[in-house]
Image (tube, rainbow, N blue to C red; front, side):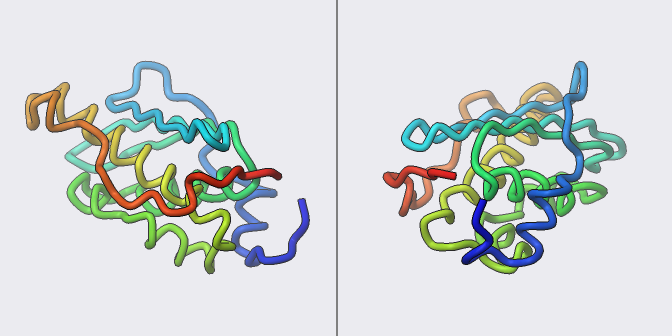
Length: 149
């Protein structure tokens, strides 16, 4: 993977991703994918006292997608669910020191998977109805582009 256009933080999270793995019987589970580039991201959470107690991810995708997954899990861990649901795609990209424009759609997947896992938990505990757990409709600029590697 060429380092051109990637911040040191992106490279660090790609080379040494945090919170990789699966949580068996998670409290919340989110899966999102981008059919155009083929990236697939799964996030598993456990919740304790309305906080993200543990969080793990599995990602099939490019280096940016892996770095984004790692960063979003770091950002969400320990936060209340209300705080974690407010983590945006932009927050993730900024925390990573920016992503090349053609990779910005990767940051969408991280935030979307986190939100999906939290909403899955909220549906299970009856805080929201299943129809309220639908994925957000946000701008999908750049999503027509393939990731490459």
